[in-house]
Length: 350
Image 1 (cartoon, rainbow, N blue to C red):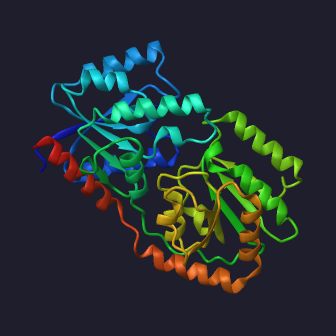
Image 2 (image 1 turned 180 degrees about the vertical axis):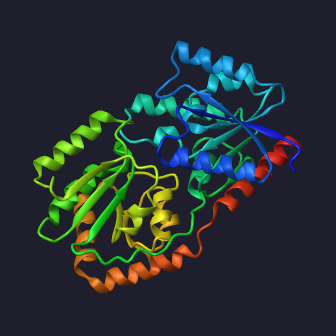
Image 3 (image 1 turned 90 degrees about the vertical axis):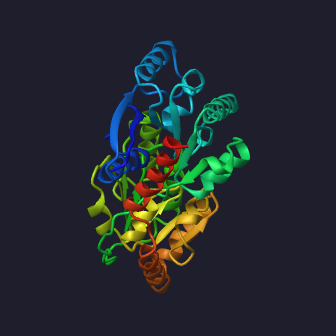
């Protein structure tokens, strides 16, 4: 049994259906399976900045933790907790969990982007160690946030094994799983789908609207304006998405940036051919043998890739076979938890 326990701090509701929260849930479960005592520490939502009341709550929450406690803090909170981190980093053993830098979120103005980069860099400087979910994010933290390389642990998200989808839909069924936020670039996908409206297909957008309701409403309006309401279904947030992959023929998500992109790994696990943007860590997850990657924010290039996938059965079957091969190489959640547990042990016993 490990001779240490940890406090795991996260903003909002741990059951939120998003990739980051899913990672947190599975990591906590994996650490507990390894015998680590994990004490959950809920924090208020911290973005886009800590106002007076929220800052006070976060300060009080961390101040109540025992001296020398190992405290893992999710980056959606830690990135704006620079003041609190500076106050507590000598008393507590702070460990940052960075899914991707906050300043790389889409739709930010230059002032907000600079503020988030500065606050996250100050906060990361207070951490004893930083856990990231991809080698891509590791490189960014070293190059742009001055985090020492030896202070970073890459713990790739795990992926549960899954049956391979039949991929026999008629018309083909396109699946997109992502929260309806600007970074996920549903707008680019909608415009691309309008370009291939002459072909048979149905698309299903699975993802919640809570993070950016105005954007979600605009997307639905855009779909209606383009006359695609009968072909694109907004399914909302779904906690258990396994059946979504099984019922799909291909996976499509042209994110403007991904720190990892667990849905791409899940699509590979189901043997789905993929169409995506070559952005962030996506090329590290999706091999050329399993998908078509196009430049970000290029709806015409995305439309061309979709047209190729929809009209070339040989191409689609080859990419499907490539996805099935890639599925064999995906790490599982035991791997993820073990990597993090080793880092925790090193911090606890310097």
